[in-house]
Image 1 (cartoon, rainbow, N blue to C red):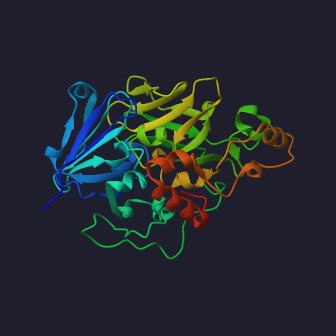
Image 2 (image 1 turned 180 degrees about the horizontal axis):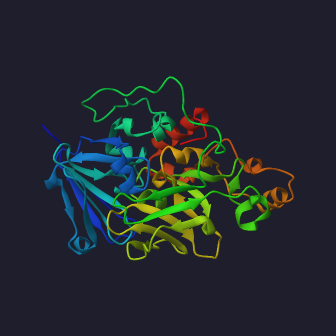
Length: 358
């Protein structure tokens, strides 16, 4: 005999969209999987999405939410929805895989010892073949199987020798391009000049080898805004970012968090940029929307911001940017652990042995 139905609540970052999910058998956990395909990467702005299988009749959006939900057809067989006001990925519907809900949008109750894992069981990493040498799946120390495509197909095996270069010096060209899934927003980033240490705007955020510093963030905002398990930001001086055409009509801005502006594509929902509205000289740029695998030659990970002492020393030539790199590369662990403590521990273990590239 099945247990009583279980009702779960959830919604987007700005709370314009709220829903109720009713699981008929409350004793069962939702079955979910990470998807590393290019479509999920470029519609969310992160390297992977996390969707749970549901039946269409289980999910009910509040009446006032419906005006804020945008649908986007990412392929002939897939329709995705996201919040038109803050970009949160909500659902995925496929003629092959059925109906799915974005797990990061679920509300977690205070008495859930294991966070969202109280109601969700993650079973696999799918479409790892779309990544370079495993992509971000290499930092998930979770013991889950990796599949070339879906979980019904062949298992993925890592390459015997990594092809990831260690510097950007061998990379041809002085720019890297980025953009969203629908190509409604496209941009390029100029490579820092050789004498970047003489520029006060560049010296703060450019690392050895003329790379941009980056980090993985597991805070609630960086989970909910794109609707992904966590997010990888690359810190790029604003003066080096150039839009390839007038994209202002396609870019939407959300600021549920005070003084933080988030920019996303209003057509496909891709989460692209964040910046603190206080005159800082850099933007946070989604590392996942940059050219792959070229981006792996342009960024390096850190776990903290440079202090004023770090910057002064670097400007004077006393140290290089690696003076403020730390061994841990996960930001806002305590915040992330409230939602998914198991994921945070998996990432911490994985980052201890993973290369600095994502």
